[in-house]
Length: 133
Image (cartoon, rainbow, N blue to C red):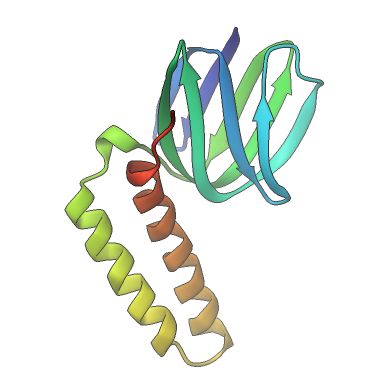
């Protein structure tokens, strides 16, 4: 088993044992199983998949860092939301607005800001729409 802790600036989002996680890193997705080699990695905005027994749970992570050592995983994030905390209608509406803003963005700064807002909205929507078998 792995001991997973997800810490945001204002709260501990997750603190329990899990069987496996899949992280969205800056280099792509990475699966973590027990006895993984020690690691420090940057996290991208995306969905973390968490396997508890045979069930999977999803969490939208808004960037951060993960450390893995001796079956202890500590994830420090700017913001995180469990899929159960996300309102599907609000997430869909936010995604559509972010998508529209991205297509209308002009200038480098506005485009970067719109792209980040789009990635955050997409991660939240994916966290509630992703199903695991």
